[in-house]
Image (cartoon, rainbow, N blue to C red; front, side):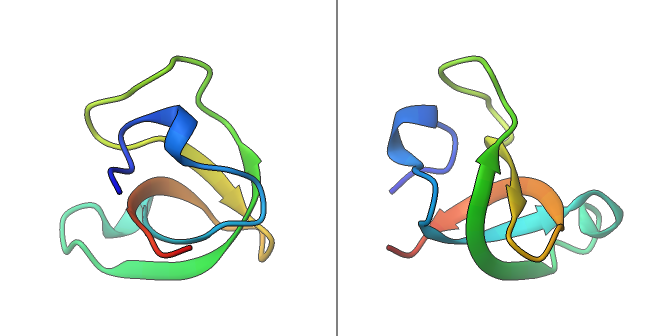
Length: 64
């Protein structure tokens, strides 16, 4: 599923995100969504979320 559409993402879903400091390298961080931070229904670079670990980044892949 696409990480650019807010309705595809739910709290508790397992996702891969790109942190701000890893945007150039594209390194992914895997975790569970704790909060959805983007208010708009879609975003071209991915919906911004906070993981349960506290990391904040844009969703690149939805795993569950």
